Amino acid sequence: MAERSIRFKESKSVTSTPASATRRSRHILPGFGLSLGYTVTWLSLLVLIPLAGCVIKAGGLSWRQWVNMLGEPRVRAALVVSFGTAAAAAGINSVVGLIIAWVLVRYDFWGRRLLDALVDFPFALPTAVAGLTFSDLFVQGHHKIGWLAAIWNPVADRLTTAVNGLWPGVLLPDSLHGVYTPFAIVLVLIFTGFPFVIRTIQPVLEDLDPEIEEAAASLGATPWQAFRKVIFPTILPAWLTGLALAFARGIGEYGAVIFVSGNIRGRTEIVPVLIVEQLDQYKYDGATGLSVVLLVGSGAVLLTINLLSAWRGRRG
Image (cartoon, rainbow, N blue to C red; front, side, top):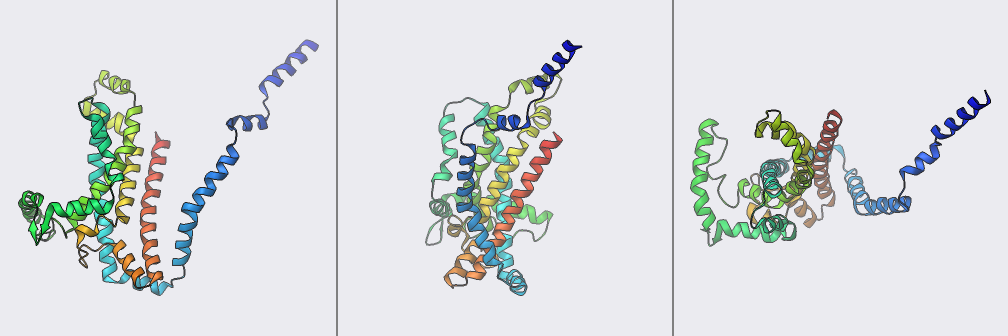
């Protein structure tokens, strides 16, 4: 009997680990509390406090002022252009970026390192230089078209005719031509946003074990079925994140867009141009209100993408 009690005490002492020791084991790295404090403080100073100040400033606007501002035709047209072109560019980048990331990860060829380095070039290049470069490709001065416009404009005319044949009146006759069109805005937004998609998908593809595809192939799956049912669900959260980042970047892009948009009211004018105009006229409330609209739009997209990614992870 005494031997049984001794064994029971020994087993209890081994199996019952104090909760405090368990909590301590979760934070093995030293200085966790101090580093966390630095992180929260730094993010608060750079992100949370400025954004909160912008929202508080916009909170001073009355309901009637918000209605008048958002009901103005010029503002509504600028919102449609900003969000529409950003969505179109992000959608194209999501497809093209996935293909480029796949090529960079899955194939070994001469010049791959150079191509991989060129992906980051839009990050280093000033956006004003990018806008001026694209503008010169379509217009060379004195209303002379550039070499890219000479190649693209006939193709754009055929596309416009084909689209209007299916859906009459959707596209204007010159809406797909060079500068001073929504097409030009989408073009520069593709240039400035595609690295976000590539750089978010590329690490996930590199960590993906090729044995998964081999197992799918051994079970009789075609390459397309293996990609659709095995690979793409794995990279879907990263793909959605890159899509959201490219969209958020496109909404607030200013330096590259103003060179190719022409700032035509009701057609190619974007919201950042209206914000700068409000600031030039010392209308800080209106500029802050428009900034909050862009903030809410991009924040809603990022929140939705994160929620979808979390739901997908729980479902998986």
